[in-house]
Length: 339
Image 1: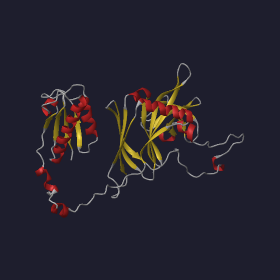
Image 2: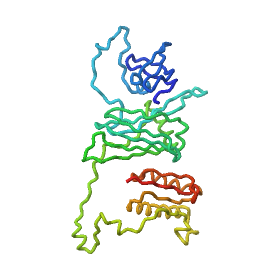
Image 3: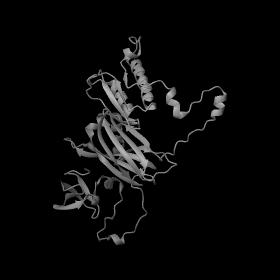
Image 4: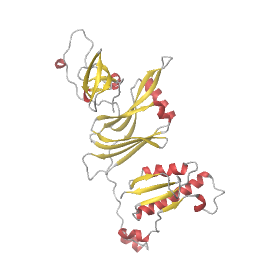
């Protein structure tokens, strides 16, 4: 839900500020303005923070009344002072502490589309590697889209913001989809907050992409020349016949992968394990296996976390789960493919 009781809101028609006192349904809320309560549709209100910092005042402070018909219309301008592209914007919501100093209570996250294209998007946020929130929707050209609120204290837990974009109107010349992600460290966050305080700016933003990418051009090869040079050429439809057989279960315990492992550092062991995983993952997908079980053990969880991060980026993975298995306990992840 975009609004919660207690949120300060702006009446778009009257330019007055009020407070949400009750959620009526998924389209309406009860607001209070100057002691008067009344219901409004959610598309008739907005948060007042951007207005306070970035919008021009509609009326000049004059004694005489001025009506909307008397005001000279201005040319439409961009709401955000950012370069072209698609951005993830963070709007800090400040409150006062016991010493009357400004402290950040939470962040309102916005997806800002400063391009001429509307996009479908999927959005995920995770903290310390654990999924927390997911959203799918559309963002239109030259508009912003409110995503959700994030409490300030959660931003210390290695937040990762992931997006997948596609065109609302498909174009054969453009990529089928485009992925972008941002990982923030606490130190970077504090620096950004101090910067916007000094510059008296309402938000800080990160660019996700400048323009939607074209379809990758496939380089054409002269296979006759390669064959003449002594290279073996295989029919792609029969390529799986020339590959090593796939496995339905792979055991990544280092003693299963190397006879001389005791002198290896933790980093070297992890590298060998991940290379083995990638090899058999590739073979499983090349042979169109329906699923794959990866035994990584329990231990510190580093190998499991690394594998799960890789799986999140793979389009052919339908789902994966690390749950109790009668043969492997909690030391294995089951991967299910969706080709």
